[in-house]
Image (cartoon, rainbow over all chains, first blue to last red; front, side, top):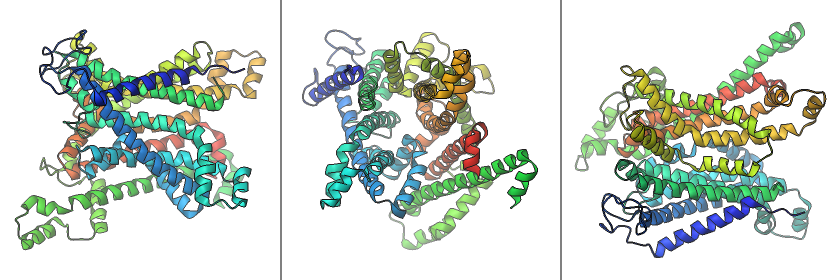
Length: 269
Length: 333
C-alpha cells in the first residue's frame, strides 16, 4: 500500500512557488525596489502596495522580492561551497580512512561543537565585513564540517558493499566508483542534509546581515531589511512583518521538503 | 592497580574513583580544545592585525619608528611567545587593552559577561522546562501527528530576531510591558530588567524549544518500541508512569548531550537577540568590535564563548555518566 507523502508534496509545492516568485523578482518587480515615492510614505498594505511602503515611499513587496533573491542566492552559493568541499572531504576520508581521516574527524568534532554563526563571525572579521563574496566565503567555510561528517558516514558504510567490490573487481577507477557508484547511493542522507544546510545558511546569512556585518546596501538582503524595519516599528509595522514572514516561509517550506525526503527514505509516511 | 584494590574493597568507592578519573580525563580533553581554539583565534587575529604599528602611526611613518613601536608593543617576538603571554593574561585577568575604548578589555567585559550569562541561563531554563514535558506529551500521542510536525517545523523556521521584533511590537509598543531599546539598569530596577530579559529569552528559546521537542520525541518513540516498555505496560503499570519513570530515564542521555549543544546555540543566538533588544551584553560588544576592528576585544570574547561551549559539553558528559550506569563502565574504564 502506497500512502501519499504529504510533507514532500507540501514542501515541493511551497518551495517551487517561492522559487518561482524569487526568480521572477530577478527580472520583474511591481515597482522599482529603490524608487523613492513609488507610493505614499509609510502607507499600509493596500491593493497597489501589497506589503505597504516604507519611510521613503518605496514599495516593500518589490524590495522583499529582491531581498529574498539576494538571501536565497547567497544561501545557495554557501551551500555549494559547503556541500562540494564537505562531500569531497567526507568521501575521501570515508573511503580511504587512515591517520588523515582520524585527524580530520577530530578537528571536525571540535568545530561542530561551535555554533555556525559564531564561527562565521570570526571568519568574516578576518576577511572584511560587509562584502557579499566574503559572507559567502565565511558561511561556506563554516558549513564544510557538517557536510563532511554526514557524507563520511554514508560513504564509509558503502565501502564494503558487494556492488562496490564488484565494480572494483571490474577495474573501475577510484574516482569513477566514488562519483558513479557511491554518490547516488548517499542521496537519502545527502538530500535532507542539503535542505537543513540551506535553511541554516538562510538563517545565518539573515542573522549576519541583521547584525550589519553581512550584506550591506546597495544589495540588501532580508536580514538587513529586517534591521531597517525594526527602526520603523512604530510607523510601519508591516515592513517588519512582511520581511520576517518571507524568511519564515522560505525556511518553513524547505524544512517541510526536508522532512518529506526523510520520511520517504525511512518509509514512515 | 590502585583501582583494582578499590574494586575489591568497596564498590561504591571505586565508582567514585572511576568517575573522578573520567572527569579528569574529560576536563583535560576540554582544556585541549580550548587551547587549540584560542591559539587558532590568536594566530588568525595576529595575522590580520599584524600591521598594528602601521595602523597606529599611518603609512607615512619611517621604518625606524615602526620598528621601535613594534618592539614597544612586543610585536617583534615569535607568535608562540606572544600567545603564551596572552594566555597567561587570560587567566590572570589581563586581556590587553581595547583599541577603540583605550580601556583594559577585562574591565569592559566584566559586567557584559554577567548580563549575557543571565540571559543565557534564563533561556536555558525556559527551554528545558518547556521542551521536556512537551516532548514527552507529544511522543505519547499519535493523533494529529502531521500537524504537530508541521508546527514544529514552523517553530524552527522563525528566526529569533524576527520573534524578538514581534515580541517588542506586541508587548513593548502595544501593551507597554517594557520599553523596547531601553534596557533598565539591573541595580535600580531589578524587576524591569528581569521582565526585559525574559522577553529576550523567549525570543531566543522558541526555535530551540522546537528542536529539543523534536529530538526528545524521536528518542522517546524509539524507546517506546522496546520490549521493556511492553513488559512494564503488560504488567499493568500506568502508561504515564512508565513514560516518566522508565522511558524518560533511558531517553535522557542523548537529550542531555543535545541540551549542551543547545547551550552553545543559545550563546550564539544571544549575539543576535542582544542586538534586537539592545541589551549591552557580550554579543552586542562582539558585533560592534568586529565592525570597529577592535581585535583584542573580539579575541577575548571568542575565547570566553569557546570556554562556555566546552564547559557545557563537559558538563553534559559528566551528567550522563551519573545518570546512565551503562556509560560508566564503558566510558570510565
